[in-house]
Length: 73
Image (cartoon, rainbow, N blue to C red; front, side):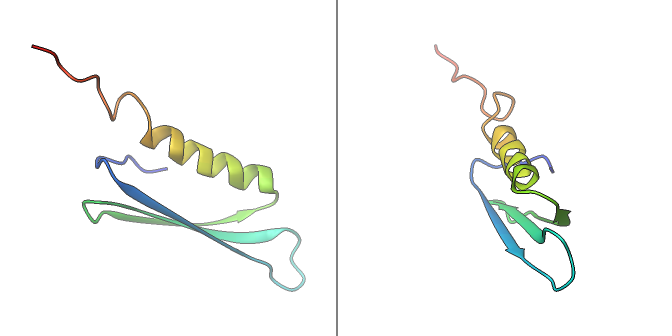
């Protein structure tokens, strides 16, 4: 997923079924507090793959690269 520079972000996952299609479709939209929007439409074939995509986004948001340790004086 896209790099997230802000300290706040939102992730919206929408899933639906379509007639004649196995599995489900999903749309993932995320936005930072800076107003940056990235949208990806992905066809998921299992809940595990959807979970992995959300976990990847959350891991990146919480990563040490984004939140370096506070400097002490």
